[in-house]
Amino acid sequence: MTTLAAISRVPVRDEDPADMARLTHVRRHYYGRYAAAAIMLALLAWLGIAFSRGQIDWHVVLRFITSPLILRGLLNTVLMTVLAMALGIALGIVAAIMRMSSNPVLSGSSRLYVWFFRGTPALLQLLLWFNLALVFPVIGIPGFVEFKTVDVMTPFLAALLALGINQGAYTSEVVRAGLLSVDAGQYEAAKAIGMPGLQALRRIILPQALRVIVPPIGNELIGMVKLTSLASVIQYAEMMHSAENIYFANARVIELLLVGGFYYLVLVTLLSAVQSRLEKRLARGVAGFGGKV
Image (cartoon, rainbow, N blue to C red; front, side, top):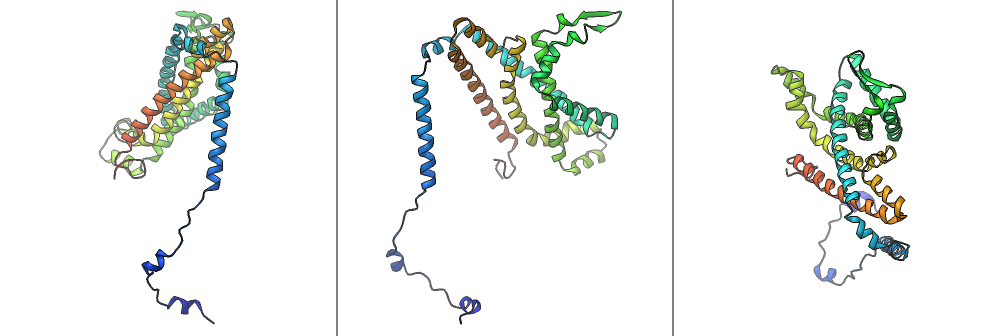
């Protein structure tokens, strides 16, 4: 009986090129891939036919692409996205630092903030801010300066506070993960040279954490572009609200929705390109992250 040990001692003879030439080369067939590709092409063709034969007036779509009302709404969408993300990033950094503090009051306050604003829908928070006058009819310093809340809490301010504060709860977890990704030796080295905590955070820790923080923050920014559409509920004149005002007047619902979808895709595509460039820049010199080693 031939044993495994005996087989292992048999010398392996190099293949003769002439013998290799007589072999039949059989092309491998990827039937699963072919079937999946055929299904996708059929689906795309079906969608194209459906949109071309549907009750869509493409001349109306082209006409409203350059509508001043739509373009004004687009500017308001971009403005709200930038301001809400700036507020969210600022609050997120502060909340992340508080969460990592050894002070139980600061840490507990940060946990409570993240728990509440991540646990409730953004639309609910938007409506709460817009109807804040029902809880606080007057805001200000009593006896010195006071304002009616209904006059102060405009749709713009309500949308900014709701979206920005909601975003801060998510950003804080992203920033905290980035800070935790930095090696503990970096913190110890900063202490060893007598660098204060905030200065070490600003000059040593945060720059190293950016490589981890930027990709999810970029995704959150793209999400914020679309999240601003919720502000149409409280009559903030962003792009979807502008589209709604037009199709309420001319009954061209699908055409105006296609116009809004087009501009959302343009914004997301531009932001995705910027995010990709920034990620590559931050990942230079890091193996596995698209950088050169």
